[in-house]
Image (cartoon, rainbow, N blue to C red; front, side, top):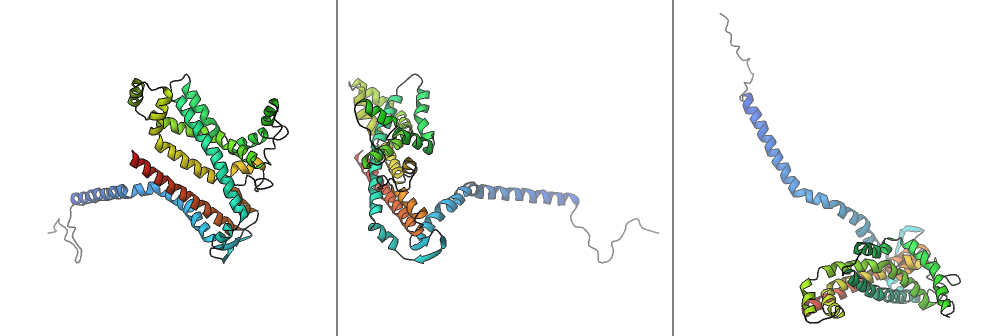
Length: 331
């Protein structure tokens, strides 16, 4: 008789797990793999999100900074930037003996003071006015920010025409009151005043909105208490608003100082020359760096100027830190 059961062939293996057990195992492995991927996602996805910033910073911030520092220790020509000759600190020592460098440093400081002080005072006054309830306050807040949104090239070219010697509107207005025409570009103080006027016009509204945001964070109880004590609006501004804005004022001073140290576009476009006038009367550090690197083809010296500017900004940052600590102790 033949049996209906088929015997396994010799050497063949019998399956040990039924189909249901195999499906359960696959489901378990899928669940375990999903949990592992979830842990990896929770652990590494934040780094993936911030990685583009660090990549761009390394490519366009850190690498140029390190390369500039390395180039400042060499004699490098723009004609052959890959050929470097080691000179050590010679580029920095030559800056200390360079009259044009000290002239650019003085001009940068003068223009910085002439632009920063009026700019921040006007911004504080504008913010104080905008802090009160006015009709169309949103329009005025947008209007004061308009100069900041204007192109620096367009603004500088317009101011260059306004300060023109023969046909400028400023000299026309001065002529109405009996003042002779002023050669704004060729004078030392007049050219620096003209460049400072461009900076003041562009950045006053920006700083005013920063002060306005800080003023709106001041508790109204302080103003009510001062009003009950008989303080006028001017006294409230002096004794309530200004002390509350000390950190913000310090911040704007530091930021404006950094901007003044890096001033480049306004003086370049005002006279159309990298020398800052025929006598270098308004040549800033930025213009001097540009002249050395791209007109005299001395990349090593230009790199040394850039690092000198960086050291100045570090000194400004340390001064800011010391002042902030002292203000924090006096509270």
